[in-house]
Structures are given as C-alpha cells and as structure tokens.
Amino acid sequence: MLVVLRTIATVLYILVCVALIIVVLLQEGKSAGLGAISGAAETYWGKNKGRSMEGGLLRGTQVLAGMFFILSLILNLNW
Image (tube, rainbow, N blue to C red; front, side, top):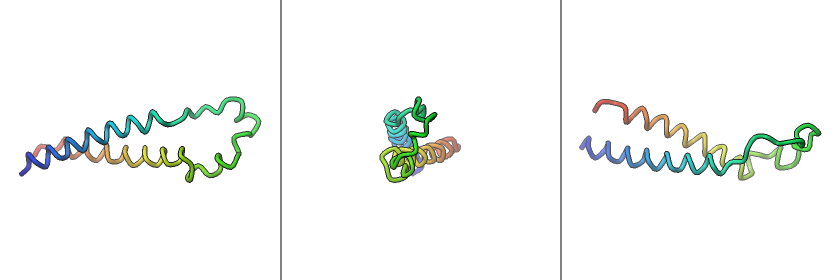
C-alpha cells in the first residue's frame, strides 16, 4: 500500500515540477524599461494584475511552488 502511495506522490511531484517550469518560463521579465521611470507602468493592466494573464501566472506559480514544497517534504519522509 505504501509503495502505491509513494508512486502516486512521485508521479504528482514530477507533474508539478514540469508545470512549475512551464509557468515560470511563460512569465514576462520584471524590468519595465524606461516606462517605469516616466510612470507609464500605471495603466489599466498595471493596476489590475490580478485579473490579467500575468496575475494568473503569478498565482499559478505560488500554488505550484507550495505544492512542490509540500510534496518534497512528503517524499522525504522515511516510510
């Protein structure tokens, strides 16, 4: 029974790792260039990042990182 649970946790861990890599690579860089100096970053999309694709990717990164951390701890237990 423990072997089956460990196998399921390992497969889930690999899927979370791959998804985390993809989500991080989809994100844009945080350097806004010269637009940040003049205040051009304060646009509609800059104020509503939670509803944009960038906000979704940020939230997805946080969730996947949490799952990665928890699964790492679970798989490190000596069953």
